[in-house]
Image (cartoon, rainbow over all chains, first blue to last red; front, side):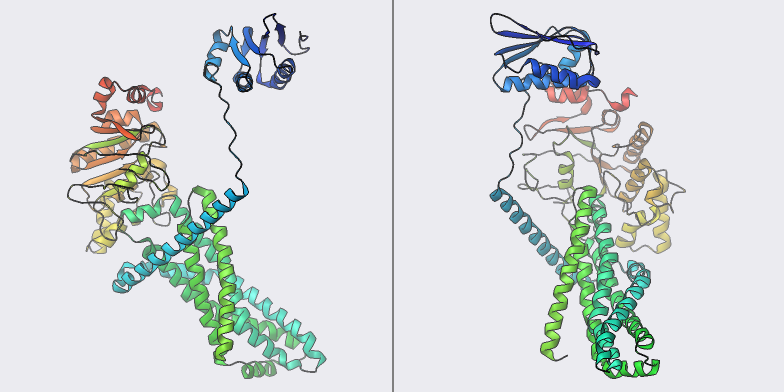
Amino acid sequence: MAPPNGPTDFRVERVDYEDGRAVLVFAGALRFAEASLVWADVRELLLDAPPTVRFDLSDVERIDGGCMALLVQLRCELESAGVDAAFEGARGQAAELYELYGGTGRPCLRAPPRRPGLLDQVGRVTLALAGELRAALDFVGALCLSLVRALRAPGSVRWRDLAPLMERAGADGLVIVVLINFLVGFIMGFQGADQLQRFGANVFVADLVGLSVTRELGPLMTAIIVCGRSGASFAAELGTMKVSEEVDALHSMGFDPIRFLVFPRVLALCLALPLLTLIADAVGVVGGLLVGITELQLTVVAYTNETLKALDLLDVFSGVVKSVVFAAAIGLIACQQGLAAEGGAVGVGQRTTSSVVSILFALILIDAGFTVAFYALGV
Amino acid sequence: MGWGPDAILQEDANFEVRRGDVFAILGGSGCGKSTLLRHLIGLERPLAGRVDIAGLGAPERRVGPPAFGVMFQGGALFGSMTLLQNVALPLEAWTDLEPEAVEAVARARLRLVGLDGYEHHLPAEISGGMKKRAAIARAMALEPELLFLDEPSAGLDPVSAVELDELILTLRRGLGLTVVLVTHELESIDKIVSRCIFLDKESKRIIAEGDPRELRERSDDPRVRNFFHRRSARRSE
């Protein structure tokens, strides 16, 4: 028989009978604040796992929900292990709680969910990827249909959102685009200056900066900035609309969400990004000019002349063409991911992250494709 | 009829809604009430069978003026638009009205639901009950004869819920609307519902159909009796 507990006002004792029955006699007040003591005592008293256990609650003055839940859980565990376990003597408030916590029911233990095996996990991931692919194809199909219908009925596109969206995607991002592209030109200038100075070819830093900025870095860096700003914003906005049933409301009012939401956003990006790219090209060259003046002792006129000599209109144009394709990719991926959002705030967050990652990957892929194509075409 | 992407929630869901009814889809949590509503308004397709609304055919997602109005559970108002713009949206798209006339009709709809003076508020600036009223105004913008409401009283304080019930009754009486709604609020059911069906999660069937007051008194199905005789949160306050 276990000794009564010290400073607490509950007691639990075990009484063993000749027929093999063990009775745990609880007395006093069992409070959740002392649940760890009750739990430890009871477990210790049941270490030898008798075949029959009774929880005698007849002397319990008061028991709270937490303690009752633990006792019911213990009874379930014992029954699952093949022990004949039951409560007896509960009355008053203890009886009510006993009933409330399912003490009268069958053993309530459920097998823990089976941990998925390796094959199971591979299967799930494969199915998820297939689902993503299907959703993307669905989106492309719906997009093509909507495009045809929009061409037939241009008025069905929500044109009035175009200007505010262009402002959001273009004008609002101008400062960060200017700052970053200036620094990119500046860094390119410094990197080139160090090498070109050794050969006395200082002036060719203008060629290096001009060509790299207009053909590659200007469009790409601007697209990355717009991806972070507008791509994430569009995905989160449409995702939130989807989970708050606003997209369903559009359907129910007879609108096509692609014409209502997607086209204005994609078009806004396709118009804003080339403009941003042209500005990015200009400030990138200015960044290089600053290095030329301060580090290479070039004059503004000399640097500018060399830049104009090195640059062809086609160089600038190729960057602008790229930026239009980048813009379409940013808009379409962001909108597709946003419209695929499910499951509340978490789902929106996941789709936003996913859209940014997918867009960045797509940008690099498209850029690589353009580089190879331009090389092959001799552009 | 069954539906759902992964699991069948209900089978053989056949029922009729009569013109002028306030018809309720009832049942416990997870039995598919809102899913059934999504099928009725054409947002989902049944795995088998068809939804047929007399004179309207099978509802489906299509571009064009809607045949009925829908109010979603949270209102689903467009957050970037004012209440007036929200209500005017279907009018601008699907009527030939001049902008001034569109605005006048939208204002009248908002006045009808008690939102006079809130035309230029954004949805984020008004209460949950007002959002639902505005959503009803938008659903009624094109003068539909049939209105679907998903949990109109959900999440509302008792006063707002009673006001919304009264609004639904007023619209039904005044405009001759047929209303199909999903709800589990006993107070609303008692007050506004004329006929209902009761969905059961376990058997995946409709287990009762008729006047809710009769079902409350006479149904011998324990699931239906338990539903109707549970204590209402609103009633107990």
